[in-house]
Image (cartoon, rainbow, N blue to C red; front, side, top):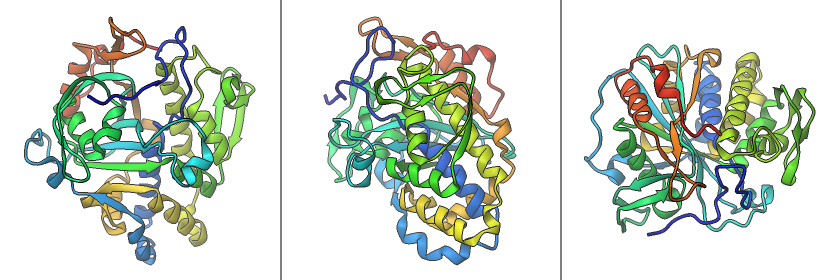
Length: 355
C-alpha cells in the first residue's frame, strides 16, 4: 500500500515540513476559461489552434461502467484537481522536497439545474479514505487500499483514479474533471494583471510565506502562489484553516475576472487562453476549445458572488491526530443534498475538525 509521506499535519500543535498547497488553482482556471472563452461567443473560434495545448483523459475507458448513476440530468458535477509536480517550470516556482506529482487540490464543484449558482466542496488532502481498485496511466491494475491519504491517490494511480475515488466517496457521478498545474496558475494571475485581496488581520510570512499587513493588497502571480500556500503565518496555522484562506482568494479572483472586459482586448484574451490551455488536462469530452466554449455558455449565469464554498466535514482521526476522517452523518447529508440537487442543510456544513 503506497501512501504519501511527510505531509503537513492538520493541527497547529504538530508542525511538519511545508509543501506547496494548490487546492485553489483548478477552480479558478476552469471559471477563467468559462468566462473568457465562452462568454464572448464570437471570439473563441479565433484561437482554435490552442486545442493542441489541452491534454485529456478518457474517463469512461479508464474507470469503466461501475460508476454512480446520473440523478439530475441537467445538473453538472466537475472535479477540480491541482497538480503539484516539481518538473519543468513548476520546479522553478517551489523547491520543496517532493518526488513525483500529487494533487493537493481537490474541489467537487456542483452546478445545479438552471446553472445560476455553484457550490464548491473542498476535500482536505490529509483525509484518510478507502481507495478503489484502479487502472494507472499504463493500464496496470492498482489494488484497492484502506486508510490512505486522499492526496496520495493521484501519485499512485493518476487523475482517473481520483475521479473514481471521489465517486465512491460521495456516490455522485462526476461529469467532468479539470486539472491545472502549479506554473499555469502563476501565469494566469499575471495574464490577468493581478488579483486584489483584503485581509482582516496581518499575514506574518512565517516559514517563507507571504508577509502582508491587514488591509487591501494587489498580488501578482508569484505572490498569489505564496498567498494560497500560506499556513503557519495566518490564523491558527492548521491545514484545514488554510482552506478558508484559499477560498477567499478564489472569490477575489473570480470577482476580478468578472470585472475585467478581457473579451474586448484580443491580445489579453489570447494570452489568458494560451496560459490556461497549456496548464490544462481535462476529461476527453472537454478537451477542445469548442467543448469548453459550449460548456461555458451553459455556465454564464453563475455569479461568483453567489458561489458557496464548503469544506467536506471531517473529524480528527483517533489513531493519528495529524490526519482526518470523513465525519458522519454530516458528510452523508452533504452528498445526499448535492446528489439530489437540493439545498444543503446547515447540519451538513458543521465539520468537527474546523481548523
